[in-house]
Image (cartoon, rainbow, N blue to C red; front, side, top):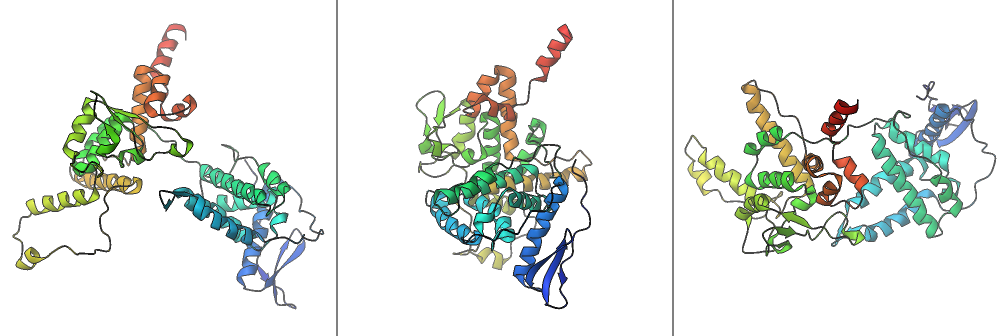
Length: 407
């Protein structure tokens, strides 16, 4: 493990000049006007670089070389933002990757926004990464964001905004390794026991309960189950074939075909509509179901003012025509919370928190155990078996049988 760092150098005021100053490695670094945002940004940058040097035991760099005239990093990020606004777009809307790039570049701009982009190198990128570690981001998130920063420099080099040597230099920085960093580790995604899935179903609306049951049976991704429409399903055979109009690997030109057997068909039949382009699972219909349920469970009569009350024509938070992955997950989280209130009163074990992706892992593990790795790969729609290894838990029973015979 890296050794502990010493006392962090303080942000101070130089008495004679009135400038902000920080003494690092016996050298005074002047930061500009005391208290100004620019001085604080430069201070954070120098401290981040100082932390990296302390962790790795490297000496302070020689800063006698004058900077070469070039664009500032903030100016290059501004040009990249204009490119990203049109590149990371799908069906006329910005994708989540655009937001992820924005978060990845935020510490880069904060620490080095006003610096010469041609002077950026691996040490600076290490400082940005250490800033993310200090912000308590997980190791996986940090590695992903650093890779996005490298992608940003690749674009800048292709546009001749930075020297190619800058991109080649930042590429040399290796990813954080497990057990060799102070970055926080996260638990891997595990399958969820069917016992806890069944315990939540009574607390869900029919729409969300159907999505949960379908995901558990078919192993679909959350983003695929929320998009289901009749027009995307071939019902000509005994096994229906569902092809989502949008999916994870559509941009690669891949097709995603999901077989729907008799159990899945029974779940979907109550949601079939005359308008084949309408989404099966609608938050508006779920809200109407909840309101009807509340009215039926009333123990007191409705007042005249309540009876005359009409829904707002333009509510601030109108229900949308379909769920997305976030609202789908929130609905499950809320149902678990409601179910646990009742279980707590009855003093029975509480339902652990789980989320839709775990249903996919459960299905992958089940298929792999019964039919093998290749079958799990086909069922999950993975192009490579090593991806299926992440989703499907290894068959421990087989290892136990081997141990019984030869172990």
